[in-house]
Length: 210
Image (cartoon, rainbow, N blue to C red; front, top):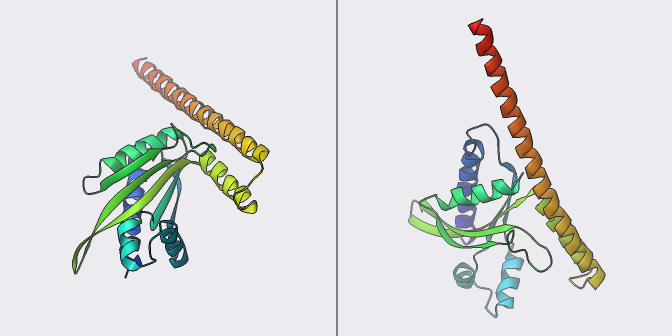
């Protein structure tokens, strides 16, 4: 009973993201590399409520947790992350509860991603329900860093030596530089392609004129 509305909300958002993926750039390019979904397990829900000094009940989970349902959207470029977040804000029936820009303002450990909590309306045979979904939007490079950082810290049970934390922060900076370089390279390629297309059209017009 608790999980079904969240699963429905994930399915609805998945459909929205699929539409945005093939329409944002007019079918010329797809901004999304892949999409991951998850519903928190019962033990994880109870553990989080315990950390909040709350009893692990149905009502407490529904009233106090906004991340029972989660979507992670992996984009190619940082520009795609910004545009996708903007498009989600424009969806008139979705309610933006809050957002955190960890790309512009990374966490102290170097973590970078764009987070949104969005309430999704679900219409069933018994009426309308609202289910919040946490959305994380990041680039491939950001996801690479976050996945390895999690794996490394898991081995140390959250107590990694300071030099490890320092090196991870340094790697986060390198990943940020890589994202910027790849975006710049992509824009240069698009510009060169547009120039070639323009020159080709000019040549066709000249040949027709002659």
